[in-house]
Length: 125
Image 1 (tube, rainbow, N blue to C red):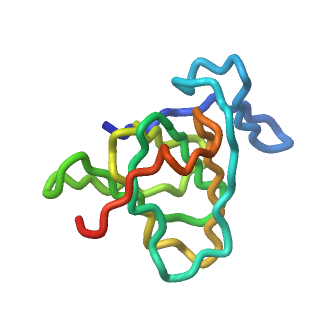
Image 2 (cartoon, rainbow, N blue to C red):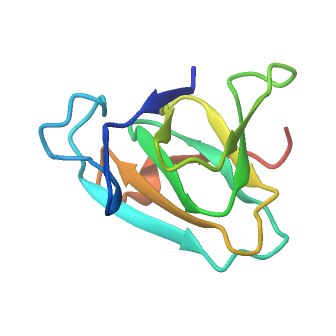
């Protein structure tokens, strides 16, 4: 099941530094790929699940909602807006990213390199 993971942060008079390192125990995988989602439109993204890839999503700016489910009717919506948390998305959960604010900027850490064969799409929920 998707869950939020608090990230370590350090605050002083200069601001806040949120940390993710290779040895970071907060991510349940070794990072193999990083990508960003930005300049969103009104269209949703995702609509798939993975065979192997686990993802950690951080909303660096703005906000969005990620709705996850294993079977239709069990949807859970997660609002992302806080850089101190990331949403861990297991491979076997469907995900739909939607309701992006106009300034939304997301960074996604993935456990696997891109492989088109790792994606499972379906046409209806």
